[in-house]
Length: 302
Ligand SMILES: Nc1nc2c(ncn2[C@@H]2O[C@H](COP(=O)(O)OP(=O)(O)OP(=O)(O)O)[C@@H](O)[C@H]2O)c(=O)[nH]1
Ligand SMILES: [Mg+2]
Image (cartoon, rainbow, N blue to C red):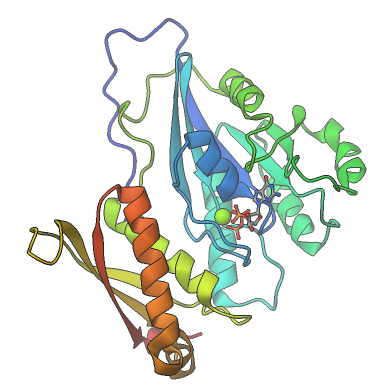
């Protein structure tokens, strides 16, 4: 995995008195909007977003550098209710593990959807930890959030409750101010230039995985993984300006998914490649030449 631990702290000499640093975990049912919220908070795409469940796989860090402190947000895989599979259990374990280590928990709920078994799973995970928690009533941009009263009735179990929207940014400055109050006085964990703990290759692989999820039809190859085989600057030629050449392999658990992702006449893989290429160009701010192979890795099954 290409996610790194924070570098050892190097206390800058000119820290304002009372500077705070700590971790704030975003937890919630799958699809609540955690990754969208994180991306808006940080001001760039740290974590991929799709309408499909369990998009986020790893506890990703997104860092806010604020004059009064440094907040390290931890995005987590959402709780997903399905027949217990190894993958789902693994993702839930990852979220529980991420929670054990934070200073404050942001429980993001989606008041536009009826509370269900996935919210019960979140409540169980929260019951296992005694950390300050903030209830974030998400998707505040939506006109209809009929289940907001249900969540408001639970507000007494939280230190604070506020309405937020990752799409429009509503409530986020207030949220940042609240979080800082819960962090201990400490020097920053990350240098000012860092906005995430993930490496460039991990981010590229995630953009491709996002397109694999988005372009797949109803059945998503959740047991897929993306490997970046090569990233290399390709000098300008008569036909092309300078480009970043990227070769990637998408591994899926069986041939059925391989056929599905390749598609008739290789239509789907071409679509995945083209949408990924455009998104990579947008994020990296440079021309990209991308090749994608789809292979079977039977060890992903199970
Ligand atoms: N209207 C509206 N839609 C949102 C908002 N935040 C997220 N969404 C949509 O909700 C869906 C899920 O968003 P994600 O950010 O991937 O949700 P998540 O909680 O990270 O999901 P997992 O990673 O699967 O746990 C996407 O289709 C988003 O576009 C919001 O504030 N308002
Ligand atoms: Mg997510």
